[in-house]
Length: 142
Image (cartoon, rainbow, N blue to C red; front, side, top):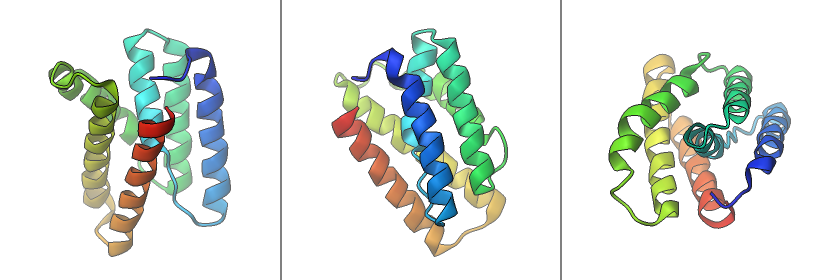
């Protein structure tokens, strides 16, 4: 991750504020991939205060969008413990790894969201838009 750890809290708080503002205007922009990457990075480097702030950010996003509480935390911990540990040595370039982690995170979130709430065409569009936005931000900015 190119962002320094002292700015993690600023990024997470701004994601909370952006989700509050966008939810008011009925635009579903989550920035889940960014929070997921920051959560994984904080666990890997043992920044536990950032991990707690990431969980609070997950809870804000879940509450604002009507998603089951702690769903993102469960998916993130599952990916961190089981899948990322297996894929860690597969790719040499870290940005590619982070994009693949975000893609897997969104697939698991999409499948769990459909299982809990049902299927619609707008949900697919929202997930693809959010996946694209997170990949662009992680690939080029972070």
